[in-house]
Length: 279
Image 1 (cartoon, rainbow, N blue to C red):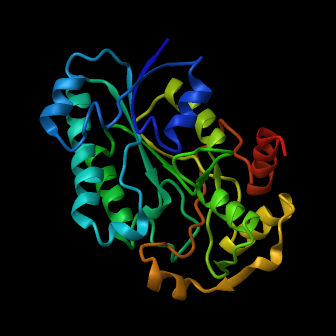
Image 2: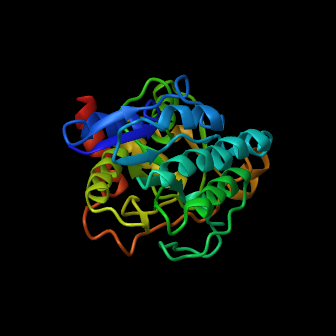
């Protein structure tokens, strides 16, 4: 059985990957309490004698709006941290998978494929792209987009944020003139299973099969979970980024290479989530 060393294994995406694939691979989790990726010496001492086949790097600074205020911290985690782990893993001639994001694109000329040119608009996207540049052509880069899942106590994704607001009868003001590509985390896990078993030093997009406006996603959540659509009002991208900068406008991301796992559209993914929640 392949041994996968993983950072970010306690996060939104990583914890679900481990849950779903723990019969396929042996996971060695490396939480930040055990290995601070920004501490080069600690990374070396933890990894130098560790027995693993593939290194799956999910740990990242992911607060998009706050990254513009905490530039140094975002850079330290997403760029320096990535370099620290990659340097040790590559020196051992081990396989490395870097989980990246659709935010490496500027959202102005969609759709975006694996061979599209990145041009990030915010600090989060910039630092994730700088991470890509460190390992490009020497490791696998897997870009994901707007991940969501049925439940996760530590962090809300966009779907559970919408759902919670509507359940609590709180109003939602949602963008109409932008696009996002919601991606069911279970699909990311099963797509990754194939990529781990068929490793190559390339870029892959593991993303949902449909892009839609945030407003449409909120309406879909309301409809499927029988919540009050009247709580959802509209705003524009231009207004939203005044408060929360760093968001690409038209994040329509697709894959030319994914002929190995059928990714769900948002409504189908939500129906599976609903069954998982037994609602």
